[in-house]
Length: 163
Image 1 (cartoon, one colour):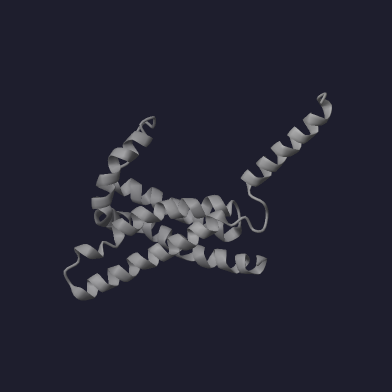
Image 2 (tube, helix red, strand yellow):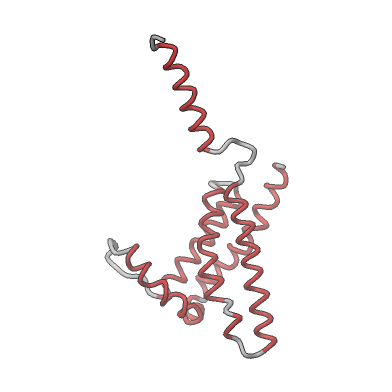
């Protein structure tokens, strides 16, 4: 299974790294394309970043998304915090998908079919990322380890209490 992870993580990451680089290189064009989604996200983003001395515009949101895709992709590919990286990539993939592949708005049947394929490709990748985000690589999860340690601590403490 370790060999599968060693191969699968970089394969899954490749689309995010190349897509993130593309987002950074072509942020002007992509921000115009993503505007319907970034305008809907703006109030939430503004509230989340209200402590910052600036507000993110559409182009900066596209650039930030690109940075998350590049950094998260490299982290997942190299096995550095792969669960967190996969979760971050999955979270950013939703606005990317809805912003970039709005097949329901296309009139041209060929364009509609093309955008629909990309939309569902992203949905499939999101499924893979969600699986990767819960993959403990054969090690117990942090939650399991914490519960086990708490039980062990209670057991040891009970040895010192008069019964």
